[in-house]
Amino acid sequence: MSKKDEKPLPLQYRLKGKLMRKCRFCGSSRGMIRSYGLRICRRCFRDMGERIGFRKF
Image (tube, rainbow, N blue to C red; front, side):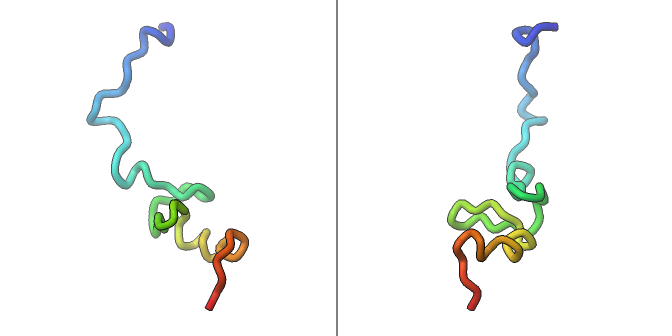
């Protein structure tokens, strides 16, 4: 089957909602921080927050 013959997935199988939101470092979808366009889970944010430019208070 060529690439032209392949059909896109039906709407019921496309990723949407929480399945689209994954951490860009570890791939987890739990504990997401989406503000400022970060898309990082809270565990990775604790590790990499200072390197990104956030300060601890």
